[in-house]
Image (cartoon, rainbow, N blue to C red; front, side, top):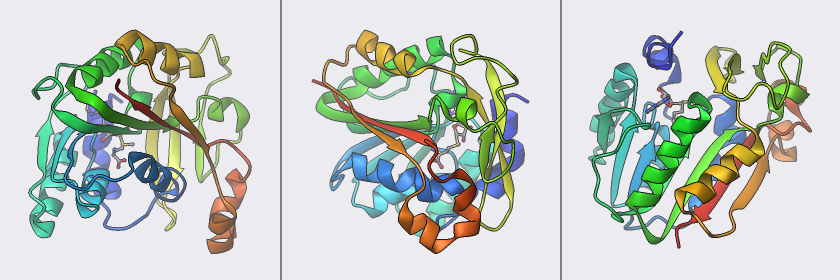
Length: 251
Ligand SMILES: C[S@@+](CC[C@H](N)C(=O)[O-])C[C@H]1O[C@@H](n2cnc3c(N)ncnc32)[C@H](O)[C@@H]1O
């Protein structure tokens, strides 16, 4: 199923007002930490989904948030929730592999939370170049992806999170689209996909886009707090690298 349809048909399952899926606990809070102080800032949220991260950044004081999202149903859900909240967020249906209609060097922060696992290496590079264009000097780029090794380490195809790499290898599988699922704590399964990239693909891509600073990298997984909260849910993926969080400053 193509990405737009995947999210159009599952938009209702993604809509949430509080942490719901595994990555809402293991992936997104560390990403918000990587964003740092956003008070008064202008933010671009690529692959904004139903607006969960945009809303959180607004709640933390961002002055303006523009969300770009491929799926019309996800955009509609984001707009509905924002009407209830009254943050006045700017959700636009669009493709993050194409030029974004914002001015050069106009953003303090660009976030892309679990977007690049839907893009090929070439598409990701185009997006990185666009991110570099729109960030002001000193602005930050923060993104998260499933950990590149996850599907090759966790070969059990069971909740709460897996990708089925179909017997392909870490290097030979680059740019292949692998299906997976991530669970909500209420047991609902959300279908997800990973267009596989190696660690080096991400960091070569950043350099080619013009980023020069050393990135901050977090290899994210289940913590002791997660296990204390819900051992049955988090236990099966304890001690496995689940996500990669990256922050890099545009010099
Ligand atoms: C796993 S969801 C994450 C959504 C949101 N960032 C969050 O953290 O809740 C990935 C989102 O990326 C969107 N997406 C995938 N490819 C895209 C593209 N080329 N342009 C814009 N959005 C895209 C999907 O439609 C989906 O809503």
